[in-house]
Amino acid sequence: MTPADAEDVVSFLARNRFPFRVQAAPHAPDVRAGIAKGRFWNEDTQGYWVTQDENQIGMAALEDLQEDDTPLFDLRLEESHRGQGLGVPVLRALCDLVFHAMPNTRRFEGQTREDNIAMRKTFLRAGFVKEAHYRLAWPTSDGGHLASIAYSILRQDWENGTVSRFEWEDLKF
Picture 1 (spheres, rainbow, N blue to C red):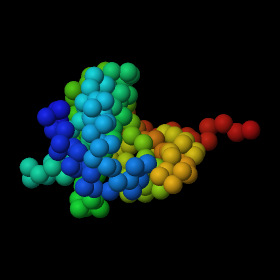
Picture 2 (tube, rainbow, N blue to C red; picture 1 turned 120 degrees about the vertical axis):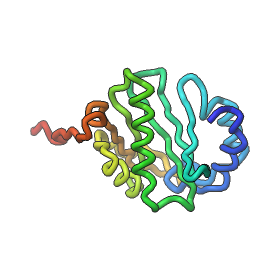
Picture 3 (tube, helix red, strand yellow; picture 1 turned 135 degrees about the horizontal axis):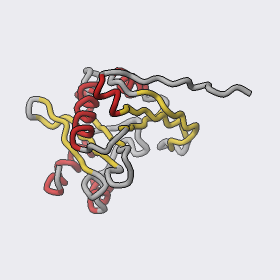
Picture 4 (cartoon, helix red, strand yellow; picture 1 turned 90 degrees about the vertical axis):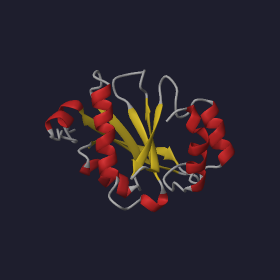
């Protein structure tokens, strides 16, 4: 995506609901304001269309591209394409993009709310490992907070088709 895609991004976000986001129903003026501030393309963020049969069915933004060697991503699929098993191939394609294009990247990370079970399962099916459980860290649209769950995949696991596990409860008191 480039700034020339701005109105397509506005249209995509404004016509879909994203129930696991703070702003579940983005409004076009808010999306335009974010775009004006560089929300989907700047030195540190790059947006991409998710396509199927040459149709735009979603969008992904890679973030923290300049800051460190662990970029994050934001993924949104059109409502009509959710629940069809597309998340895993999209995540794998994002991994391919990141690890091929960014040779210094050691890890690739994403986060979701604790109640977004579909996305949490998608992470696991795509070879990501749960690394963090930030209690009451994700604000909700009703003013509450839920846990934010972080998942990542290591370059070495992506290259080898493996999943490195670790012991959560490594210390006892």
